[in-house]
Amino acid sequence: MSFDPSKKLRVLVLCQESLIPPDSLEGYTEAQILNWKTEYDVIRALRGMGHEVYPVGISNELGVIHVAIDDYTPHVAFNLIEEFDGYPLFDQHVVSYLELMRQKYTGCNPRGLTLARDKALTKKILAYHRIHVPAFAVFPIARKVRRPKRLKFPLLVKSATQEGSVGISQASVVHNDEKLAERVEFIHRKTYSDAIAEQYIEGREIYVGLMGNNRIQTFTPWEHVLENLPEGAHNIATYKLKWNPEYQRVVGFTDRPAALAPELERRLLHISRRIYRLLMLSGYARLDYRMTADGQFYLLEANPNPNIAHGDYFSDSAKSSGLEYGPLLQKIMMLGMSYEPTQF
Image (cartoon, rainbow, N blue to C red):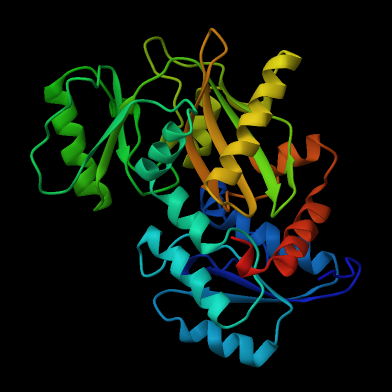
């Protein structure tokens, strides 16, 4: 099915109830704005393009979506949901509900969300297909921490399901069994989720943005850089780094196009398209890699429906590839409107 990209659309923007943005940024601090910047940027840009936009806050009731669909008969639901009732893995069920309602939506399909949101399952699938991932082990809640002998230090400990660097700090990198047990317990207590400990790989942090359903478009590889990293600190995307603008300035955080040799870039983009298909992703996604000194790429995480705030990694890499913010959002909607659940 094809759609006229110039047509003005009725768009439901599905957000967490607590992240419905105000109409203006006036009077809010930089840190406050960061919480709902994506929602604000998307709504503002869509309205600026002439679309009818209806923000809908979701907490723990799917009926809100049903009512909004009946009230507004939207052409597409722009899905910015990352959890349901406080649980990240439930976002896939919100998308399944949209499919049951025969409602077109943006972003990833339920199967892709299921595979990619489980970081251990993602690594198992990719390792089976001989794609480099860090060695890892999962430590479930309420079980004694026993490190497999094959898993060597240093290790990075994080939630097996939470996104947004929740629970990640410099202390997440551990060098012995005592610290491993302490950090696993912290993740259990802090995130109410299983912990995953994975081989810590020194190197550059590189992201690749992709979009598409059947045909996949890749964007300029992007690099996360800390120019003033304190001596002895690890080059990792901690929660504080992601969500504290003042700390970002202190450590000289920046992101920019990754300077890669042409052959390395071609190999990275080829691997990225393979991963996108193997995990049955659709819509758009960001793949996070660690690149070692000898040019080996290790997939750290696959992020369907990544942050698409204006000026963030994904939108900046799209812009570097010739796709400005408004056209990027328009293409995301067109992909959603052309997607059929039987494709995956």
